[in-house]
Length: 86
Image 1 (cartoon, rainbow, N blue to C red):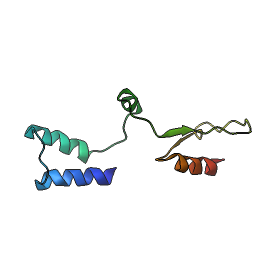
Image 2: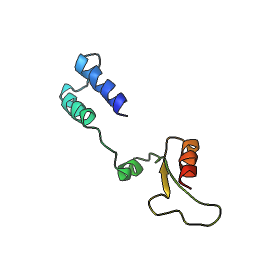
Image 3: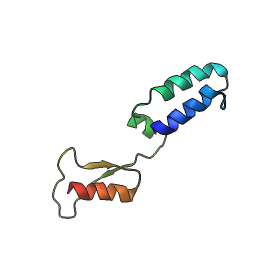
């Protein structure tokens, strides 16, 4: 999250956290200072699970294109989002 990245960046800038080797500190600062969405293909490559759920209707109706996927932190949260779309 942006808040976690900002905290990690501040710890290095304040000297409370040291990056070894020191020349990686510039990369650390650039990465955490320019957070952006992560590429899903990278996530799959490294074996991370993607918190995305496909909506499946019990009545056989098709979910509108663009609304069939839900991204959420938990399954319960995803179910709530899916229910609000149906």
